[in-house]
Image (cartoon, rainbow, N blue to C red; front, side):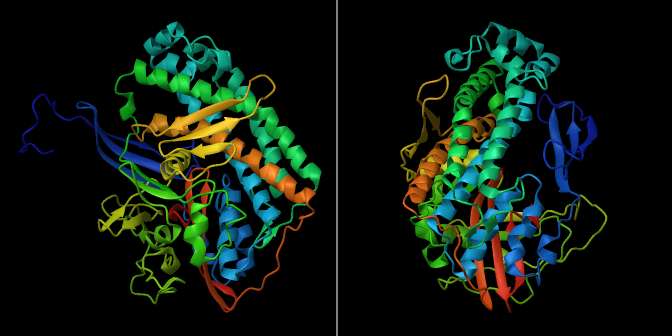
Length: 522
């Protein structure tokens, strides 16, 4: 604001302060936030997010044997490496024209379900709840803590804590009961993962065409016994989170605005139905809708599409403020998809990564991250979807679609009902996640324990289906294939934090182009 501009009534002369946080360590550590804050008027005047890390995977993947793609791209991330391996295998299976045996698909589903339970638990209870625990609130807002001491916990009969403050104490880092129990649950769920995928977090038994996991009956009973040990913890976690988050809405009017954004959610789907999926592009719309987490793009609360073909064709990579040269004048790798639809030059299949290192300039180029968008042809807009919507997007899309109908999980059109069996101390329980009013911090956090319950419920079904196949003697877990001279493929999956897709172009039996999406992975 300049001295010649009229200030709104009641505004004070600005007091601008430069503030930055780099790196932000509660995530991977390569995100920086740079701001100018007007403390007099309590406004963020300017804000830039930046990444100082160039990963370079799309550069050095070129020329590699495509069969190595899953093992290489697993190393993109030290947190969600298995999600990348799974997604890469999906893309390769499309390119090779191979469908793994049903038992292999169930084994992958079981591994990914364990990963969701592991990661969401450790993130929610050992990282997120630092913001809501007694020690933090006592230091930052003692009045809220005093109110929490006087507020009875509505679900105390489930989780055993009398007041909201008691729950908050249980989440105190290193000392709280729930904080420590969550670490134990994370160990058990990681063991479950390793039973299916061999090694955490970079799988050793996932391959295109199937898995290397030995499908013995004890493989699944060992998984199931561990799952049943954490079932009651999951029920308690949902109840505790609901109690604390509802309390914060009441104790701090206006708190719903924290992290609130326009509802622009993307979900690429997860948990393949082995009886439906064949990994062919031509049938992707059909088997995509049969996934046990339903894909969808949600704009202002409305479902725009659940067609994976349309979702794929709408993907765009814009340069934004990143340190790369444009590639729109290069020759495209893919002009049309297998159904004959034209493919845009800014689609991941056609992206060419040409890094241009330079000094950070917030007026021009300042990040190694490009700008992923989804093109809505109905409105002619490039939408900045919340590609890290994670459990909120997965539950929202599944609920709106109303397609999932299993013994343990049912989507109603406005909610998702999750049934968990009797555990060691708690009875059979049905939980219901309802589409919220807002897409904000609390609802993103609330969705996380509900999706842990969702993953646990689906894991019960996958174990039952897998055991049925083993009892019937259908123990094949790998299908042979040949790498074609030329092919394209795409894999759609959900990383723990949100959408994930891999796009592959093969020429002369080698990788000609390879791009994970979103482009923070590039």
